[in-house]
Image (cartoon, rainbow, N blue to C red; front, side, top):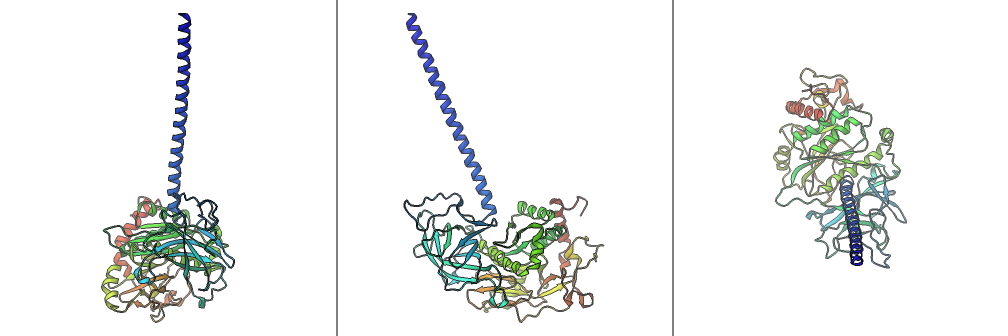
Length: 499
């Protein structure tokens, strides 16, 4: 009997030990599963953060496996891409080096070529149309890439403007979608010299289609990269500028940011977090260009042409990433605004004035002639306007508008660009259009003009003896002061006693 009890006791002990081990194993597996879930959740959050900050990164959730024993056009994972200055991807060929900024799906009917992928980037030399470069296009559900030879290199500047000596040249590169896939949007694209080359770039194809049941909005403003690293007062000017654009009828504003003063970032970050109508895009310059915060402003002032070619990358990126969402794109700087005179907003200016006046002309852009407004060192209207409202304070301008007969050159006109007709744009007017003519309609100054502030310029129009008072902007005064102060208070720039 004792023996039986002993065996039963030992048996119970063994069972208890086994049960405990099973519990420990299950507990360990549960911990590993929890750890795995936490890791996946952390990676998901990290991927989302990366995607928001770096729109050209390859699909982070796309775990393609290259076929066994294959050496042709292998898939490039995000970890294998050759990056440059955070936001650029690099590809070396036998003749040149490319720095790619973004890739975009374009299915506009007026292009004449059908659906295509447009790639923005820079090359370390001028390119001819005879270049044999290929796109490796990767579609959802497909392991192997499809190939498409580049059909067009669109130079975003002009060889006649003496920019051939620049270290990097800006381009828009076009690849048409292959037969049988023209109805699909590729997830990513790599550019290489030969079809089977293994790339060091893999760009996410950006496509933001219009949501079902919605109509395009009218006006998207594109603001080139800001680099006011030492000028804290530009925080106020940015707020005044953005609020004026919204009053005039801008549906969306995209602002590119290099490095700026902390106060400017307060305002920009406030907009980015609270206003769906404003995007702030952090950016850098590629290759050997200087991105040093304390030095960049000095560097770009010493090499302004390097700044100019960078600007066209921003303007075209702004247009192509929102191509299906807006009717007109407006590239302007924060020291200027297209000011409606005979109307109170851009919508009436374009739809009630410009379009009827240019009926049947197949116009690609509506152009506002430039006139310079002097910047006073002392406030002019502190009795009715806060001293820090730069645009409202300075209402003295030159008497003469820039001529209207040369809008395709380097004069300072600015334009509303028709999204359905423009292939590429630059600072002032369309760079290239689908109809090859890029016809424009120039506003009469009685309808609209470009209100452009001198800010250090020495042209005669900026001198006191050549000025006239123009208070057109004051018709928006009360709303602009109220809205600007609200933003500055909420962003922590003004105290609560400012009204």
